[in-house]
Image (cartoon, rainbow over all chains, first blue to last red; front, top):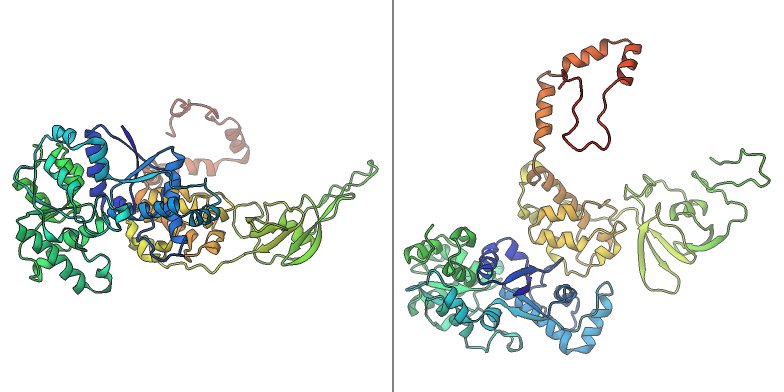
Length: 294
Length: 265
């Protein structure tokens, strides 16, 4: 099986661990990953201004690249890229007036009418690979690892591009269970991580993040799984500061879901780039015997 | 300069070259619009020559006249069409009903930096040019490039932290600035690309070890005696030495040829 894949800028820099673990896992699962040529920024954050079509040009151009390759699906990993690409795709597919305006402006590209489906990796794993096949491919079951699936905002909002209905977390739950982990549901699974509020003032972003981490800890989780680099930044990279300031009691390491998938499939930890996570992450996996023997 | 010396031909053909174009006899003229005013200029001239023919004098905005220096970017439009076209005045041939404008300079932001201090990470480029992230992928920059550089491609590569790719994609850039003149994000693409190539050359591209070795040999005086030997020769001996020199055949596969004289190796 071969997939057309859109990475996104952050996955080539600060969130290289999200991508590296995914690519390594897909290789184990027999899926060939073909990164689309000449992709540009997804356009995040999605513009909510109705007549601001110029901000849809970037995402649509990426979809044109996929169409040029003959792809009917474009798989992506980052929640934010998924959201921006999927929403732009819906505009072009459903609104013929806006579609024509965008196509006329992009006279350097082939016309695009929403032919490519934007697919999040979690959907792809559930739909095209299947939990059963993943369960069978697991070499190091994450037995005893208590993980909360954290969706944040952009995987489910708005409903028409959500990877599953609001309030349901079955995709990441299904994956984590297939990997042998203990799934710990918690109330803040779709609470905003604080997003870009950190740019306006640290206080608000910190208290929002603290609510999520503490809620997961109280529910009994010892780790969080996410698919969003911005969530990982607010909840993971900044967690040490939250502990120092006393807003969070004990560490709840954050992982990308792809990293948990990779270690369970027996991918060497070095290939999952845990040095880009908070330090407690790798320590927890070692502690729980969730890493393949070197 | 002209080839008017051939008195045996019946008609003297005068070729339009130099700073004053001379209209060849029987040459057709075509109308062009320079800054909105109509001029009749001979066809086959470049935009630059045509403007000089029309009486304009380039004090700036003309450099090499060979399509390399990037000093003469031109924006033009054909009568009856909204589409803008871009080219170099010294390379683009005039066509009838062209509306022409020269953009010899564009006031694009250029950051100051010390290449020895900024380091080789993409974050350094992001910090010097935060406007990079104003790109909306409209691609007008790429459409404006007279060198067919994938400008959006290298801007995207830099957002993705890929300095090598940006340096390679922007290699043909001649710094004319047309990309920046079209950018709705006010991004100085060509200056950012130059920084990317400098960072690539300074921090990322592998060092040429054989060159360093040779420089070391020269500095250690390995070749001083040979140079002195040559300097002391008479002109005749030097000529003889030059004529009789051994030379690697042009198409010799690398590493296969060795000179017979090995004492200088």
